[in-house]
Amino acid sequence: MKEKLRELLPESLKSILRPWVNRYRKLRQGTPTQVEEVGSQKTNYSGDELANGLNREKKARLDEGELIRSYFSTTSRKGDSGIPLCIDVGAHYGSSARPLLEEGWRVVAFEPDEKNREKLNGSLKSYIPEKLVIEELAVSDEEADNVSFFRSEVSTGISGLSSFHESHTSAGSVSTTTLATYAAQHSIGAVDFLKIDTEGFDFHVLRGVPWSDWKPGVILCEFEDRKTLPLGYGWKEMAEFLIGKGYEIWVSEWHPITEYGKAHDWNRMFQFPGELSDSDAWGNLLAFQDSVDPKTMESLLNTHLNLFGE
Image 1 (cartoon, rainbow, N blue to C red):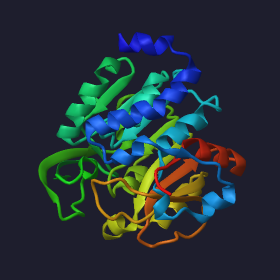
Image 2 (image 1 turned 120 degrees about the vertical axis):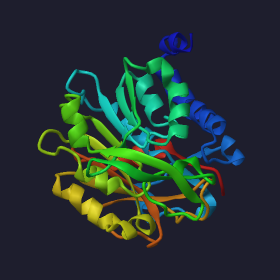
Image 3 (image 1 turned 90 degrees about the vertical axis):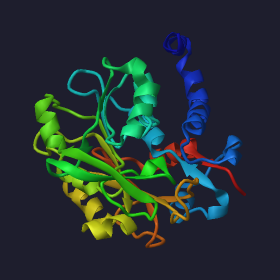
């Protein structure tokens, strides 16, 4: 019934309702957020202001996945079957996958945390198997069995292959694969959007992409040197790797994390190369095969950026 109702809604109304529906889902699912986020302010910043940064008091929030979804609405990329395909590595509860599925995308979602995967299956079961495939494998740059996996009671969003927080406890073991191996096994010939959020292993995932066979139109991956330097790489190394693959890189920088399990504060967006305003900052790299006009990025940011402070 809910799917039929969605089909009847005009796209203009869906666009208005989607941010509020997503916030409601995140509250129900326990995704870190704050009650004050019920009333947000939209923005009208210039590109220079967005590059210079917003202070913490603005309590700025940006959903980079939604920004990229909007970007795709202006392009004609459509996978190898005529239907756009997203590979979601670290799908959590499906907050990134759902809006894409609602727009007719196909999604392959990797979620090795069995607790997260149970909620993912429950919330998106109506899309299985026609549009959505959920895999229990972890993704890295090598295939292996019995790899240690860790979970936190502080935040469901920091499960992974690395124990980087004092709240992490052992959650057994998982098997890892590479995207090259998985793509060969499942005849995946083209990917429109590759989203990676593996709590430190994002560069490992990138190294396992079958670059000679396909290049995603857009890649979204997380960085935080406090997590990844102990694993052997920093954010610039990952950005330069993607530059070497022919991508244009935009850096979505967030203020340093003060506490997991709470809402975080967005800072700014700038085009790589460049420097972070704080060495402890974290954020996401947005890698585009096609060049993005700065005015287009400015418009996308003002559409999806929300302020919950002064």
